[in-house]
Image (cartoon, rainbow, N blue to C red):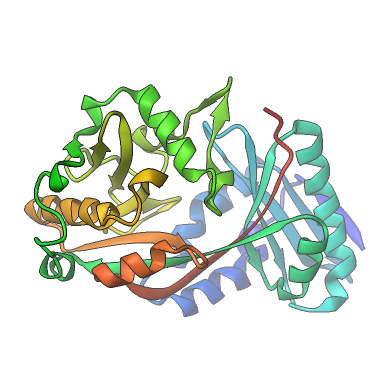
Length: 316
């Protein structure tokens, strides 16, 4: 077994099987085009990588994706040519490399894609990784509008709260409210903190997860920020599906179970229809209580599943 780190290799060949598998799984996307930016970065040694060669051919690989302004985390992919327990020693070599990088840098490590690695699931959990399975849901906007229940909430939210636009709210209030709402959420690890502040909202509004759409986005306000729903144009990493994405939605604890989440989504659906859109999508943790809310309002599972493994070395 030979290890190669950041040397010039033909990544089109190394990732070939993964690209073909993705194309077969999702015929509607251009997998080659999707991977092209990643292949270009790897081929020019612009991002860290590790390749393991066994019997003269690549048997395992890993690379770290650009994290941009999210400088508190290492986002990586791990791949194996064959999904076999025989690769365990190679997997341990790669995991030790990633673990060392994360420990020394004090960062959150996220394995956001693992190709041919089902044999590694139990090992990752034993090594302290948490599994986060997220499901994509989608709904035609007309379904959401048709299920609107005017008796549930009036236009002024029964006088309990009002709807404001993002630019009408102090950003510090947004940061605090979102952080408080996510403290008991399985996705709390995704929050980005620096210098004692939650800066996730700055990132959402600056386009990291797609171009921010101000019109359908809204803030629930009652003596302070009580919730929010942020919509982007649907860009996810290197893909732009053209379907608006609920990139963040939350309601603070004291305002839950009153129908406010549904109201915020219906508000977004109405505005998106006026802009000429027909559908809306979101990602949800498979164990989240919100799944039933989304189903009740018209969302359906698309079959797309994203399994992330994470381990947090950050210190605040």
